[in-house]
Image 1 (cartoon, rainbow, N blue to C red):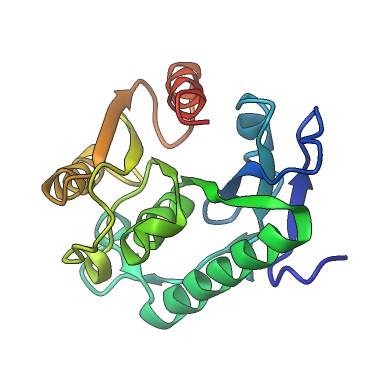
Image 2 (cartoon, helix red, strand yellow):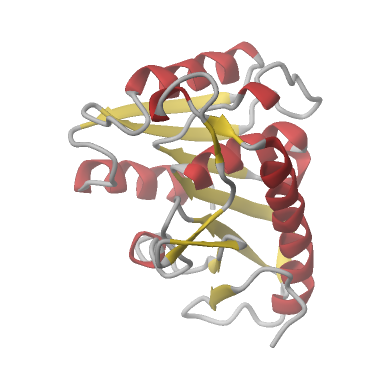
Length: 218
């Protein structure tokens, strides 16, 4: 076992890096899933990447969640992260990234995030809190929470971000994803955006776009 605070799966690159620090992607699953859920997606990414797929801290319906939902503004389509839960998970992820860099010999200057749904919301928030920590971010079927919507940090300019949405997504409607894209563009991140067929899931066209984006950054 390692000293990484969050339970996780680590998949080392197919080829060794001759003792040199190697790039990595940290994978953040959605609500009710677990650290195994997005491994098939991560398996399609470039072979030279370490994959560290983290498990959210709280059990939920056979899986795990990063935070409970604040539904005070209405239904699911208007939900926000519970503030206390969200803060705890953001801090746990940062601590886990730092610990995994040491545990697995990762290159701290070539760390990417890939998140889906709650994991995408979390990934975008982590980026805006500390852009220099991450080389790139993939955020699929998520939004930018109100707690982070006004952040304009140094280092965000030109940061590569891929934002994916589902044209038929009823869990996180396209307009919430579009609002995140608009805000990221306002702070001058280098945003790529796609709306893909289907609902709240990653289809083949979206996966192809993600792989192409990551391959161009590794």
